[in-house]
Image (cartoon, rainbow, N blue to C red; front, side):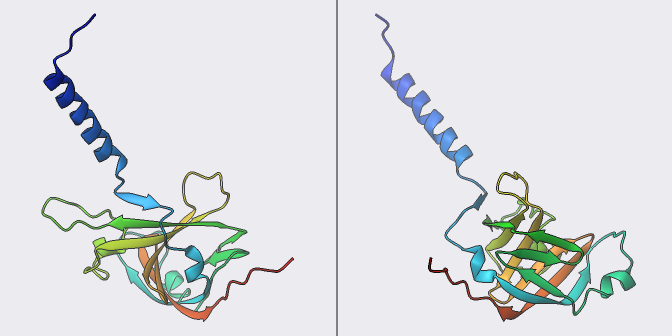
Length: 170
């Protein structure tokens, strides 16, 4: 029979549990209580901000101002992208503003947009349910304002039509 020192075993087990908890508590999580359907509707690209290098000229990018964006169960469309029957998931990213924490560059808060936020919420758009990586990521500023970061620019979207989601009675 093997005798174990309880204090070493207890300390090791406590360390193991604490390490697992640290690894399993995500910095960003998907599938929260937020619903992507809350943001379904038609939006208008009303402003564009240049944030870095781009292969698209300023004049080409400016042509998107005033164009509509569709977010819904049957279709997701923005610029030249159109997905039929897209899958949506929500993501919330906690922003820690302590010294030494670097905010990821794929978030608008990094570029100075609405910097007082403590969380950034994003709508993740997938082509298929089996996809591991989102086809598009759309940030939520509020219930009527969204942001897309693409090709060195931030596209600001404003809701012009809210879609009501009704379940069909069979």
